[in-house]
Length: 384
Image (cartoon, rainbow, N blue to C red; front, top):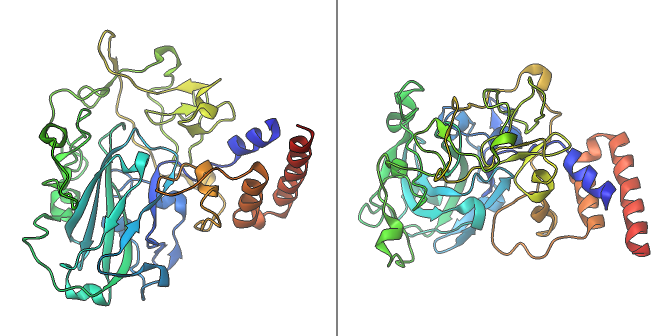
């Protein structure tokens, strides 16, 4: 088991941050492959372009063809769940103005199911854009994540503004405001730590009509107090002595360390003993650094410059990794996927086989090492 754990924590963290991987997202930019680790990065503020500026699919993929009334089980890949936050799902016909279908609280923690309504534009019969946005509860600067998928929806009856009253021009509301639009940074407004909602995405919409608790669904503009982040640049850490390198950058690939020049992890995460960021006990027990946050009651806030993940330089670019299609629902439980019905965890042997087949077959030496780990792990389980 020790070998297995060591392998899991040594594996490059292409799953830092979060991205929508189903419906199948756009994955090419200027006809070149756009990897999962890039899709995981936020729109605000790493890739300040709508839908990451990716190429539209020329045709709708088979897995993205739906009917009115279908409920999409959203697949979210990544490890940096940032303690939840405000998620919204949209459609668009021009990739500028997006009309909201539904809001979901804490989708990175609990997953999301999005029913496709009949009142969508007639263009969606052939093709339109489905988008996911998320403002995390915990981050350095205020962030907005966004991924887009090209879908078709059979049976739509045409747009109805009374059924879907919230439409936002993402270009003018966010991107045109730029990084110097202080204190909001591209117009981004933080999530209220009590309700987990933000005003970024307009009036709240819920399709099941079960919002009976008004206090739970209050959206506050510029909330006066957000715990654990008090004013955007002040943070209270649960383990202050381990919240090191606060002025250092966050690596887009999830690498970290305890040296003075090493990358730190994003707030809410730990730097595990093998030098990668994560949020589970495997990373936070015996951690090199701990940036998990807490409420600021009873302690002095730690002033810190808000950390912006910087684009990876040429020397830090990971080996190309194709988007992962899990062969079993249990596999993804090991890599932090949020979503319903993911079943029980896979066995250690099954997990390693899936990882080896889907990811590591580009490196024959590493694959041989994984197969040896499978054999040794199986022998250990039999002896146990």
